[in-house]
Amino acid sequence: MSLFFKLGAATAAILCFSIALVVLLNFAKFETTLGELQQSRLRVLALDAKASTEAAIDLGLALPAVRDAQQILTRVSGMDPDIRGVAILDRRGTVLFQSGLHATTHLPGSARERAAWFEAAAAAHGGTWSHSDREALLVGAPILNPFSQPVGLVLIAYDRKALDARASAFLHTFARQALWPLAIGFSLVCALMWMLLRPLGQRFQAMEQAFRNMDGPVHTPPADEALRAFDARYQEASLALARAERSLEGPA
Image 1: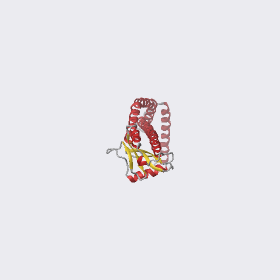
Image 2: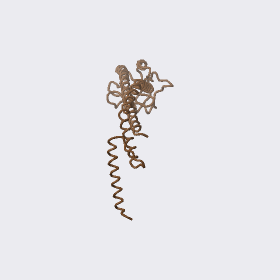
Image 3: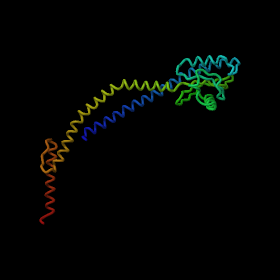
Image 4: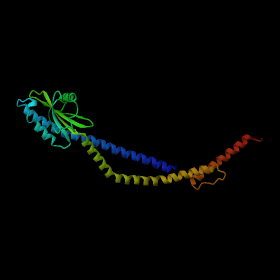
């Protein structure tokens, strides 16, 4: 295997690894940014539903008696087709009102888990709480009574597959758009390396051939001037070493 091939293969491997690393880092950054953007949109919807529900509670109604709660949830769930459902829970995790939640897209978690979500949302800073798993992106906002005590939770469940589909579409689009520039750039790098490394490879091959001929049965001086000078010194040193060995051996 020639030196040129080894260097070219190593450079090509490094270039491909660098390109793949850049693509993966950009994909991870885009996926994170997309998730944060979607969380921000869901926070706005959750806070809007929270404010509308609290306005009804301020009139003296208990949370289960808020008649407009179902209409509020229906309006929120219809704002995005990828919202799996919207629900209002009490502090025990019991579903009081829900919209868009049915057998195939049920509300995630058990009542105990939803009660833990209520506690986490009540203690969260900024007025909202979020949680993400493989199935859904959850965003909640605690509902406060006139005494600023949490009595319920507006919970929005967003389909996680929709986010993954958008990220995959971005990756495919980026790959298609970047394929031709990367292919052209890779070809240019290979051509530049061939132009730079070919003379070096030829020089190394000439040196290897010259070293092999130095001790061969038929000695042929190399064509290269620099190698010819080195070969002459090597031959002189070899002759001097041979004479020194004969003088040390002496007459038998």
